[in-house]
Image 1 (cartoon, rainbow, N blue to C red):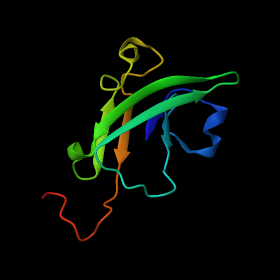
Image 2: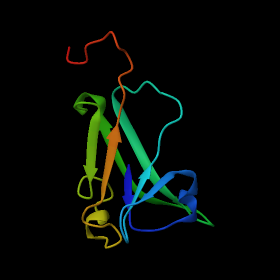
Image 3: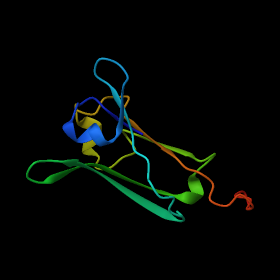
Image 4: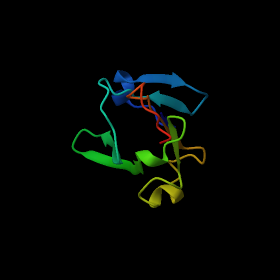
Amino acid sequence: MLWSNKQSQNLKKYKNTSMGKHLNKITIEVDKDPLLCGDIYFRLMHKGSIKNKLICRFALNTSFIKDNYYEFTKATVDPDACIKDERFHDDFKIECYFRDFCKKCDASL
């Protein structure tokens, strides 16, 4: 999930739920279930009329995912300028939810 305080025409294709006067909750689901293992790298882009602009990027290693959940805050995304950028609310966060791929395997091994 991605938290944003900006309304955008580009969000119409995502599930967009109003969470208050200025906050939106955007859910982006991956259609196919890719097998993820090791380092995962994400880039969130704003689709502009002339060019796309980087909003933020973040990475994680699947070894650090606990209970199929991982959270990024304003301080843990890159670039570091996000921390000082007033467009990013102090409560900005990205929540990543995962599903188990193999029902037979024990992930704790």
